[in-house]
Length: 276
Figure 1: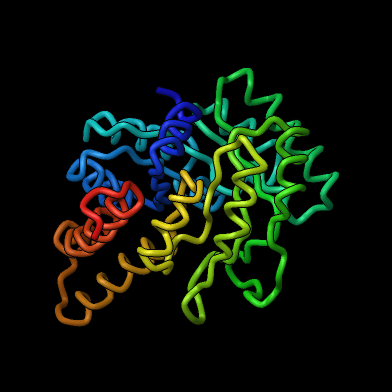
Figure 2 (figure 1 turned 180 degrees about the vertical axis):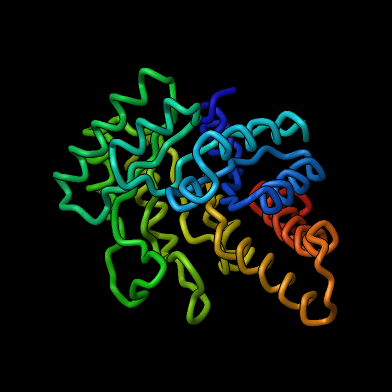
């Protein structure tokens, strides 16, 4: 099943796909282990930084081979693609889905750029995600307000033909200063006005109850990145402080297990399974 159809299915069933960023073999394996344990599908996300770090072909082949080896239903997605050139490069490399992020541009320019990505992606049958509104990126202010307007969302989707829209309803990338307050009424209004699948960025740190409420109101893809990096590094750091082991094959597994446990829990939350 292609990602477009899977997202639709999730939206109809009030479920969501967890989209996990991976940064190396260890984080990839941790994510896939959790997906296999829960028997749930997963989206494997790569940013430009991760692609540059691992190399395009290595990253894609590693993800594709991992999905096959772990027998997990999954898709490879470009997270926050900042240019049409990168979008096209990823599609040529075999990505199932791409995000073109022109959200910091003026509304009309965002439409224009996003429409170009949609036209290119049609040749590959790929899913296209875009963003509308202000969702604070790492290092940006969480105080700035730029929530997605429901009417603008409707127009944006109609003008671009995107499959999925990342909405600004109070989430942010990175760590939160306090408990995030999501604007659920706005989310419901956006859902009423649009026919695209809705995406929640900045899923790290949002309470389980809030994630479930967002899914009930139309979110069918939730991004998880910061918590994965943090869990791996904090676990690894704690282990290294207690011993002088230099064998990576012995040092990494405990940190990988911690990430797997995290992703396992998040998968169950977004799907609604075993959630109390």
